[in-house]
Image 1 (cartoon, rainbow, N blue to C red):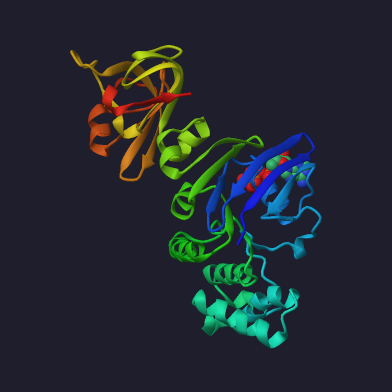
Image 2: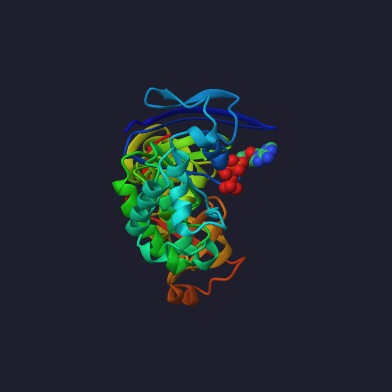
Length: 344
Ligand SMILES: Nc1ncnc2c1ncn2[C@@H]1O[C@H](COP(=O)(O)OP(=O)(O)OP(=O)(O)O)[C@@H](O)[C@H]1O
């Protein structure tokens, strides 16, 4: 198997996508980004469904640029699975091998093998409309893998599924991706899909890559507001000198020793709220206005406005005691040891 080396430049009206992507054989890369960032455009460009303005798509030594979509050694799973409605599950999966010149019987044998691997051998003769959403998605995966693609493209493969089915299908997908010897690109909105399924994250915003790396690094050191929200951290940019970081309206004391332009991040659960200003404390303390309150798992997530816009997680009991209502002023505190500062 060979890896992917792509430079994708695509102009679509006023939007320009310009990203470089390398994926090693066996590696799973998640492409994450907000709506309109260019994820689908990148996937379609790799599949040959969207012409490049400039750049290249190579798999090992092979240049795919001149190949039409159906001749590319690529398997694609779309969000809405796009199975052929008039073909059985078996023939849907056999379609790829048949198209690549495999005889009818042999193609069906390959298809049955793949349906067995995704646990659907008993449903081989069913039409797509007789399958559940999760089953149809597994048939789509079997169909994509049946051609043994050098590059597997997954476009929001779990987005159309309900929560329970999603959990099961994600676990199953993980098994198949681990076994897949080729490169995989997973386009997703869902940080959980990315963290569970991918070896590496590539984050695009406005058509360019804003951050990439393994999950541990990206989640510990977000570099944009979008990434910070994705991983659930408060994020600020400022100027550091020693253990002090000067932000727009506030100076934060941090544990890390840093100098120059830095990011400071901390968890919403690290922010404590008080009705009265806590006295004699080594913590960072600032006055904040409650801008919003939302449920967040078992806790409440409080949106704070003021000199340091932040999210704070508090227990419902604490919220009741503090009488947290929108518009109220509270004191927020975070310990230096709960912050994380790193070069910008
Ligand atoms: N048919 C089109 N013609 C012109 N511009 C388009 C077209 N489709 C999309 N775009 C532009 O391309 C940009 C990227 O769209 P794309 O669908 O790739 O984003 P995305 O990251 O996949 O978003 P989403 O998560 O919403 O699917 C959009 O901002 C949009 O302005």
